[in-house]
Amino acid sequence: MTSKPRLVIDKTIWIRSGLNGQQHVLRPINTALLERGITVLTLNGPHDAAGLENIRKTVWNSDVHVVLDAMIPSELNKLRSVFGDRGNFSMAFQDWWSSVYWFTKNASYLFFRNYNGIAVRRKLASFTESRPPLFTLPERMNSYGVASAALRLPALIAAPFLQLNNRKKLEDSSTDRLLYFPNVITGDQVPLIQAHPRFDFSNISSTGGYWLMRDPHAPAWLNFGNLYYDRQRITDLILQNGSYKVFDLRRSHYLNWSEYCQTVCHSRFAIATGGLHKASLSKYLEYVCLGTPALGEEIPFEFPWLKQCLFPVDTLNVTRGKLEPQLREALAQQPKLRENCLNLRDTLLKLYNPHRILDLLQEQADGKPIPPGYLKPEAFGGESGQN
Image (tube, rainbow, N blue to C red; front, side):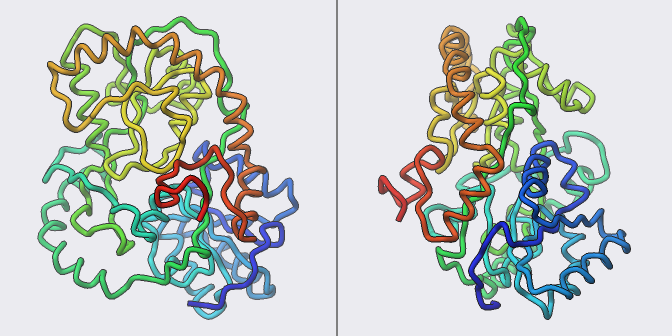
């Protein structure tokens, strides 16, 4: 690994994915970087020759530290020719388990939006304790979903051999190299909408999460398995009941952001899980800030405030018979849980403001502890403060 320079966020160059960067959750960081006067370069996919050449010229004519943020694997493969000899870069992950591992191994710092990437490296947890089904049909018949379903069984056959190779590849996991970089949110993203509920429970998320595990800290037997099976299972159980008004994204067109926010606000509960890998998805933040409680599961290390706004359900083990009284109880508690959401909104908009999160990165790089509000004690090995 390259030598690790002192990280000064406001004196960096950021390279961001033009494809991933279109996600609504990633846009506020881009705005905050530009407001700070930080140079932001964009690579619009692996075939963006002009963008790649601009990046090459900019970074090779500078010794400024570079942050590669939320890049898709095909973009990173193109950038390896730029950073192979130069080094002096850090990685900011969206889905760290699927990122090109050469960059992870050689980066000076690793910025994790999902704390599970840090927890796995600190041996606080495994990537997941639950196994996806051997095979699931894709949520939608698009090329990626069909290919993932077709490759699931071959991937399982290859998994033992890939696991043996994974053990040889693990990178330096020094704790001062691992920085927490949670998802951000702004008031403009989540406008409060005065709406009468149209749905009792809404699944406003994908129920198909298929990845190729490029990081050796993520087990090879998860390749092309459905990590969102928990979300699929609980949604199907609620639909089987037939007594409730349910919105299911699988039966809808893809929602634009305005439609997404309106659907959340029209729902008494939004189904929320982090997947089998219990990732800290931005949807938890979005639901709460839109005033809609979540029904589903907490995540182990992040969002200590979430229990105030969530009705817990064991999504992988609850039976249809046991779920019915829980759903009735959830609806009875909904007014209080909604009140909790609304009371938390201003606090969360401050905690996860994009400038505050960039400051949080800098504080960690300077050796300061992560302040209260972001993590549970379990993130520090069960202690009450940062270790």
